[in-house]
Each structure stands twice: as structure tokens, then as C-alpha cells.
Length: 359
Image 1 (cartoon, rainbow, N blue to C red):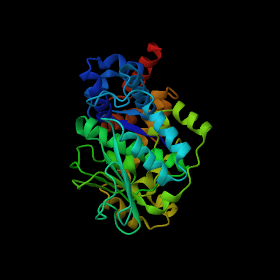
Image 2 (cartoon, rainbow, N blue to C red):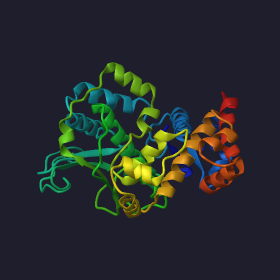
Image 3 (cartoon, rainbow, N blue to C red):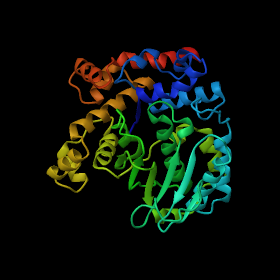
């Protein structure tokens, strides 16, 4: 089972707008099933489901899809209206993304999108690029993003806009949109390792623009969603929006996916994973090292995320979980979990208990 978790950094950033509006964070966290004490643990993480619940709580408390981060609110229902325009009028991904860009350009604050193709063809805010700049190399297209009006702390607005745009594009055509790379105008942040989990592609920082670069041919893919699919998508928001596809753009993403599919149960060895990837163990080590990681680090992150999701969901005891993850005894799992998150496993069980009490 492949599971995802979210760094506590993103929880803190999501709460920034609520603090600005004078809303205390503790009740919001408790209703989301997140123990407030985790905010003080720099290594802490929460499950994707907990983070999605927090976003829903913030949406409804603030009536603002920008989570209180902008100069003006973006009222609930704005994103749904954009989705309808993209689905009903977008015959292909190109048209749908241009409609989304034109829609958000009507508002004084919010995301700005601009689709740029080789040769200068572009759509959305800003019009055509007469000099052909920004189109990427060869046959790559780029979706340029600007979240200046609501970026918040540590470029949270830019990150979430890029994530939502990427997931939304894949949902429209019912297939993952593999990224050639993701470019960010801001410097590499302290939580830069999270970017591989978010985008599954090489990321560049300090560039002249923020953009998602992908094969141009995907723009011709037909929009395959309909009314029923749209209703289901919006009903599951933000879970359906934040859910990450299994990308194959990096070696670490491939290793993580293969390890995740083995859980719960014994994890494959580096040699077995290399065999599944049709490379030698030495090649696998070199590829992971080039991405700044190792097999052991990817393995630990996979086990960590699985443990957090299981603990938050109350699906297993700590003793059972330690066995599932291959630890010889619960004490060894406790030590590893504290090293991974800065907290004990029971701190994450308490987060779920808070949610149950608040319902």
C-alpha cells in the first residue's frame, strides 16, 4: 500500500492565514485529527487525509479558497466554477488550461496561469509571447504560474498552485502528466526534499519564472471528464486534488512506488528493486546519489509515511505496525519513529483521538 504524508511545515503554512484572521489554530487542528503539539516538532508529519481535513476546515471557517493568505478572499465555489468551464468547454487539455487561465484572470487576486508552447503560442494572462520565450526546449510546453498575491510563508501559495494545476491537468485527461521539470523563481527552500514527493520530477530554483514543463503532445489529449466525474471530483476535494499520482520521473519515485506496493509486508532488497527496474544495483545507487538520496533514505521515508497513515487511521496497534514494517521489536520501531518524526508513535494516535472527540 503506497501512502503519503505531509510535512508539518505545510500544516504551519496552511494555518498562517487563519492566524492573520484571528482564528485560533488548536480547534481547527483537533477537528482535522492533528495533535496541536505536533506544530512544535520540526520533523513531524501528518497523513494526507489529515491535511485534507485541515484544508476543508480552513475553507469553511474562512470562506476563502486561498486559506486567508491573499489580500482579498477567493470565495468558496470559485474553483468549482473554473472546473465546469474547463470540462464543458475544453475539448482538449490545451483548451481547458487556457479557459482556466482566462477565468482566474477575471479576479483581482488569485492564481495567474499562462500556457506557453514552442514558437510563441500561448494562452491565458499576459497574451502571446511575441519573442517565443518561455516555451521550453524542443517540443516541451510550459504552464507558467504566478501566486504572488497569496504566496504566504515560504512560498506555500506557489507550491500549492503548482500542485493543484498539475493534479487538475491529469484529472482532466485521466492520465498522469509527466513533468520534464518544475521551475521555481524562489530560492531552494529548507524543505526542498519535499518537492520530489510533490512533483516527482527534477526541480530548478532561482529561475526567471515558475512553471511546470511537460511534453507538448499532451496538450492534444482530449478532456475525458463529464458531469458525473466532476461531481465526484468536487465532492472529494481537496483529497482528489492533493492526491499524488505515481510518477516515474525520478529513480527515487520509482523505488518509493515499488516499496510502497509491498506494504504491509517484507520490503524488497536493493538488489530486488534494481531487478524490477531493469538496472544493476550499482546503477540504481548512482541514480539515487545523483538525486541526493539513497536506498536506505527512500526506504525509511516509505516506512515512515506508512506508519503515520496507519497510526492516524487507527487501523493497527503499535506492536502490529512494528512487525509489519520489519522491526524485530516495538522498541526498535519507537526509536526509528522518533528519529524520523521527532515524536513518539502514540503522539500520532492521539491526533486521531482528538478528531473522534470533536465529531
